[in-house]
Image (cartoon, rainbow, N blue to C red; front, side, top):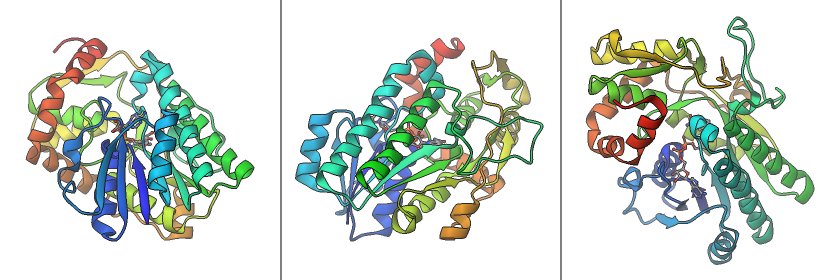
Length: 339
Ligand code: NAD
């Protein structure tokens, strides 16, 4: 089995490459990544010398390159993680999201239908469903919830999902889609909430929290997510969407306070900043279909997962320290003001 994993130098893709390379020594795993600001080959250090792993640098939206690659490699499967993934960046530069998330996906789909494939899997997000009100804890996103996006990011992801499903219906391409909630765990780029708070709290710096911090996210440990995708690509039904969520709802403020407690840092570091335009209120996933059909069960609850994650960042300062100093620092200063 030869699998092209796109976006494998990013957070979830990197964790998925580790999972597949270690679990399936007889598979060939090709990590295809453009190495944008979010890609980091140091994430792949633990697997880079394994005989079943290879890295190829390239752009999923570059049609000539992708077709040449498929002609040469003839992959059996594609798992597409590659994306512009940060909502704030999609508000300042929507077009790059259309290019990678929509055109990149259709380019991969076209290559798959030209060269044939056993499975194309699209890694999507619960953000395609929009948001839920804060005062209705009884409501959850199911696979039947209508698409109702809020940001340029989620609009580009929903658009990609529709192309994926259309290629199944129109061309008979064997596709699956997973839609997950917010992931956390090792190798998470420090612009996202949890690593951002950990890295800044360790340096006793202000911790930016949007609005009043009451927005609710449903946290999923990245290794539970990788297990889910592994199951779906092997046993999921073609043409189906599977929601992946850990039933770990927390307000952003609760998450920040938990991290401060674990690191023994004061809550006075919290600095409330102007809310993100169109900020989604609550995400909450109903993963029943994945649990009953494929027997998936998350191993982590948030309290143990967050403790282990904090410990990982403490043990791997070398991985994130230089990211915090480079291009990312300029971006952060523009968004939230200088430190
Ligand atoms: P990430 O930003 O950490 O990684 C994205 C990777 O894609 C990077 O390595 C980047 O270099 C690569 N990339 C970007 N443009 C590319 C292009 N044109 N060609 C090839 N590679 C390119 O993202 P992530 O957080 O790991 O998310 C992975 C996927 O999961 C995304 O599709 C995202 O929409 C989805 N998702 C993420 C979360 C989350 O909590 N992180 C939640 C739901 C869904």
